Length: 306
Image 1 (cartoon, rainbow, N blue to C red):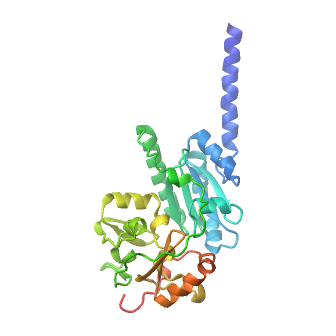
Image 2 (image 1 turned 90 degrees about the horizontal axis):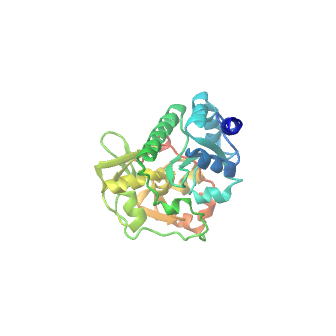
Image 3 (image 1 turned 180 degrees about the vertical axis):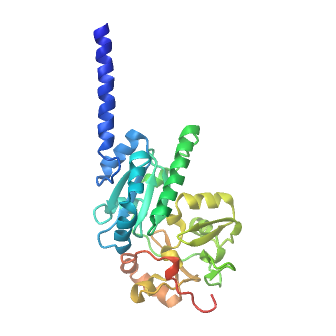
């Protein structure tokens, strides 16, 4: 009996040492194998942090040097997240699955497949760490209270539907993009992106239910809309934070589009400065979408009167 007890203790110690060895293989570093990273996420019950990038993406290289390789970020990978870098040219299916349309992008997924966050664009080290800390705290709180929402069935499904045509919103208010009185950029003229996305309706939001995404403030008509937007802002916000994609690709100028000239392509909303650029986009939408990168608020050239 004593020999058996010793054997069991030895086996337990071996299992602990093996688990530690397995964890140390990725702790403090980014993984490159997505399938292996997903297994680690489930095994350790830690969120999977997927960083989508491409070798040709300038902001991606900048974020790699200034943020992703910093000791502070690497420490979170050994403590709170399983991190994996996803090359979009290699993982085209996964890129489409998580609706990644601009680079760099980060998608954080719970072990059960729920999308916890989706951010787009370059992020400095401080902002990146702050966002990760917030998501980690929220995830751990959900785990402790067993109140995690597991109803987001579509977030983890493979995107296999065929190319969808461009659809215009059913109604278009006669207004243009504007700023509010304290100079923060208000997206969609204050109309709710959730109502527009789900029902193609222009519904005014309120400052009581508002949030900021990539430097743009969005308003909502109900707290449930706000919560849905914050769960996956990249899905609902206009591409290029509302700038005309035709003008951006052909002139490298970030000019805000108008809510009068909106169109949907593959589920994404695009705004245009005129019907002419919208029609030009409709003729070859893939031509413009393929070349899109990231726009920041600082790059926007506000037209006179906006």
